[in-house]
Image 1 (spheres, rainbow, N blue to C red):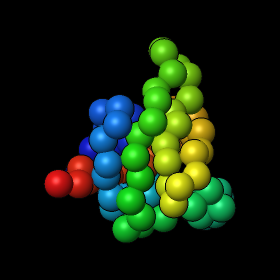
Image 2: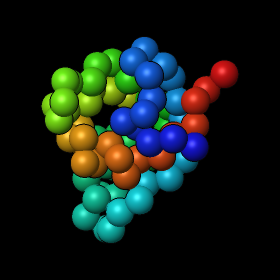
Image 3: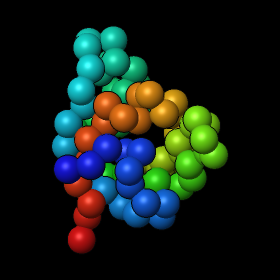
Image 4: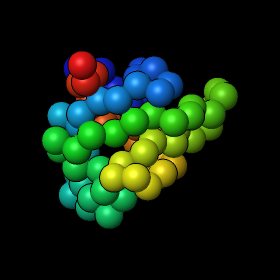
Length: 76
């Protein structure tokens, strides 16, 4: 497993674990990011910028700090 920040741009992965408290879990669920969901990394801002992923056809921007708490497994 790797974090969302380590996932390559354009790569598809499956969310395996969300490491955070109840508030973090709720925030991710509201964005459509849940365990066993498929995500595709669209872009990664330079340095400390946000990471944009596609979930269920919608693009979502996530802060780099949050992305380090999302563990994924590369699909394929």
